[in-house]
Length: 366
Image (cartoon, rainbow, N blue to C red; front, top):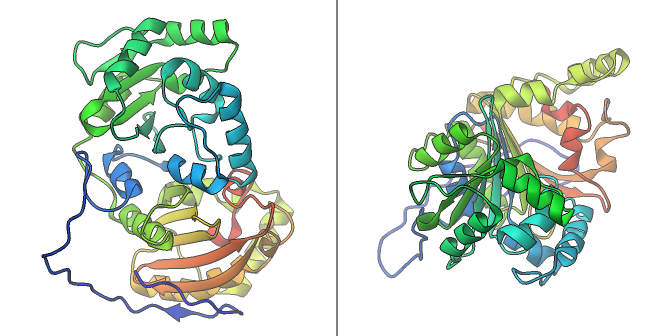
């Protein structure tokens, strides 16, 4: 995907898609056994269930590099908590399901944000699952021994579901560390260097059974590609991806009080025509720039939404307070096929990702 052009003030940029034909020969790409391509985020989303409404991504290896932390599997729980505090200050710990249980994970279960590669927390109407990418070469059998030592019930198959609600509660009581319900059930998938956890055994089993079925929505796939491209061919540090129906409901101005809703309607009318979203994605990249991706049903809708969304990005933020420009500067807005892509520079001390959970988001209006 072509990189957006930086300019101020924002005007519509229509990106020209460039098709790159890769000729075989002379290039060898080392691929992990559980997937192909150059992006853990792409592969993780492909592993996720096909009914996901919210994808929450954290590239823990990248976050450790960004923070400048040397925590690892041998660090103390207190050192891990210090690392998480630093990550939180940079808005890099709002998409994880592991923060609540980080100390318990580090001391008792054998994996945590100090040592894993990445995490994709998925939520749907039927359940939630946390997919965790282990460092290559992790002794997965040893993780199973730790679970068994804590009192988890070993499954009949190697990639079956370990049941440990009582064991988890007991470990939390004995250590004084918090335990997330998402750790009640665990699956260890050694051939993929993967741990999958959740709070419902049947749902977790279905997630593991479906790991080979890439049912990823095309709109989500395009948005993920745009986020990866924004991170210079690697992965964003943290990201939230919402399919359209969920985005239109969870970020809607209907959450605001009547006066703010009226203000939002006035601002949208002044900005121009807007259409419902097919996908919403927001990510923080290495270096702490941000990329916003809004997906539409076709190229024409993306082009006509680009100017309106750019205007809203630089205006007031009813329902959250102040202006969006208090939170970030808009570097560019680009229409690229059915996507509108905005590159942003967060203001120092702002929490661009965390703000998704603090009120309506006018520039994501449907």
